[in-house]
Image (cartoon, rainbow, N blue to C red):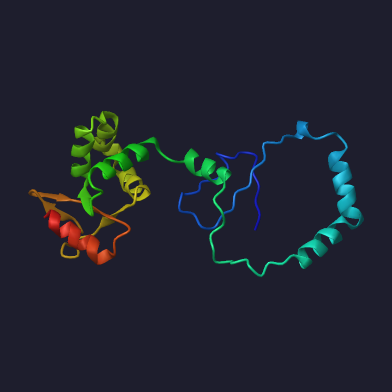
Length: 185
């Protein structure tokens, strides 16, 4: 499937770990082509050009092609990804790095570390109730996922006399994330 857009950074959302899209981009505009260019191209295609393209593709050696491998991540791919990366993600990643990075942590732990690092804008953003739904997504973007407490019906962990969500490093197996969460209690 091929789809096109005239809006590189607003045309679609791609996460950094996307394995399905090859992104190609050209900065050429209509003004970069002489007036007769498109008429000549369509004329060539309609007068045997499509057969030439088909013959070229039929003779192309694709024996080394691996359909299961992710496509190369081009500069245009990273432009699309970065256009949709929240500013909070970079600071949040810095906080996780400064924390070790931890096998598991809580929102309060991240807020405390952000305050220690004098990242007051991030600290305030994390404290805002209106941002609570976005926090899980931001943590996931930085490699952390919610770890549900298997022993509690609400899935929350009791830490320092408060029910809290725990986030574990995604790279760890699920059992290790649960074990790391238990250590916080």
